[in-house]
Image 1 (cartoon, rainbow, N blue to C red):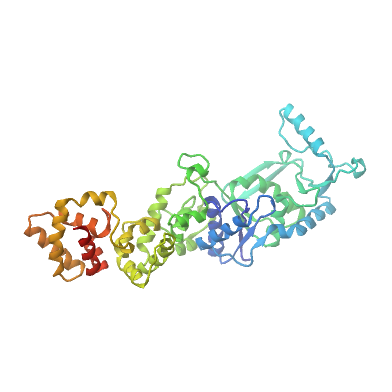
Image 2: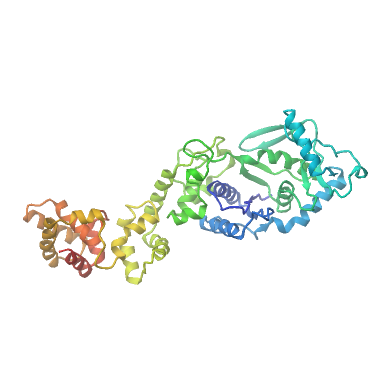
Length: 463
């Protein structure tokens, strides 16, 4: 039987890095096994679910390259089916009507607090007839959970996790207004979608114990469970916004490549020997649940930067230029055919110095800027009166040179030797004049890309 995995986010917020890792692991497992990966939007919380969050989740999945099979399932649209299963459990004797009023339940909780007991429903309507109910109290449907023994979640990551049934109360399946609860909806949807493997965060472990009771009561197949340890910040605390935890779409805006992000997310709790650089094709070939660690992983954004730098250097100059163009357009930079060609030509030197597309966009200033250049503070300091005098003579030396990096380098070295100067005394002010910055790719490569007319004109602007 082909396996089916699913990613089931709630659209009450954006797709965060932990959710993206869960989605990736489910996608990899399905692709490794030649199975199906499904996407379900759990939008039953109508007050907090938003279209913006749904759009951001889908956009984040698409950017990461995590394609799903079949149509997206929207949980709220299946409420009638969920209610149908609650009624079936009631008919089978595995559930019952509870007529406890909100005031009655609050009084029960107050007594439990006062006695120092756990707050849980005490089963008061488990065996009572409806004739005992007060008038005008609409009932809820509760599961008739086992009161003794144990429920065991057999988990591929956590091992066998044992829950004593006396701490699992008769939770609600269907609310008094007829709407299903999350606990019921998840189980029904997983069953109807044919989900064979449930891979999710370990904050759902207790939910698994409760959901098993529904599955067993309905006589359905139990999925394979794999509960992932949650992510932590560098300080060891649970990952939160203060650690820089962002929506996954924001990593795109920060200039990260999707292939680098997939590699980074994969290494948050999964390993293959000592390999750090793992391509997506390798990940699909190697992925398994047994290699998921049981300890929380710490998010380290320096590792992400380093990985992204690696993937940028490995990318073709054409593809990296294409990835860069939207960012330049956001900055109001118009890239015509001529500028694009120059970007591709300069990319080998540019990508060696950048770890993100944002840094790359900063680094291409010299190619997209219009004369006269706006010099940064460090560049201004390099252009002393003595430096400008050197540039005046150097411009003449360049005028007769062949306009390629090797010839320009030779001309500059010859000029330096004739005038008793170190090459740095020439290259640094030259870089400032031509790029407006104190750092850039190799200056002679820059000159070659800009061409003689533009290069000499920029030098002329500064002398």
